[in-house]
Length: 110
Image 1 (cartoon, one colour):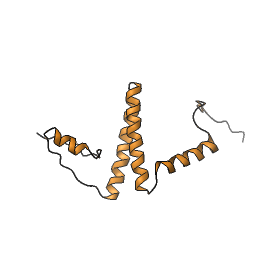
Image 2: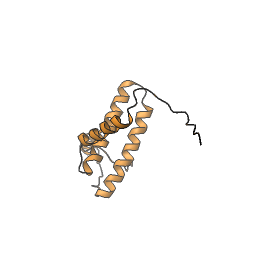
Image 3: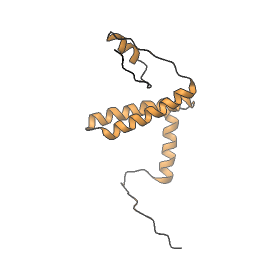
């Protein structure tokens, strides 16, 4: 029996599969394909954040999102410190989300 996944997985997953007595069939991705798969993985992980049913699940899924973001930064020769610096600059200029402001509409006087 075989089960197809066709998705990017964490580095230790093939070893875990082997330890379970199964045989993983893997491929090492090109730079282009790796970036594409990281973006797909980011979307998958964000959907899992949205679907989390409790705080523990939410934190675990946020950790997965963080890991994917870290990999995306790395392939751009950047670090999460670089991402955090940009986030801090944007927060200084435009604010954060702490005030829970929900913009309904804007009325223009023209």
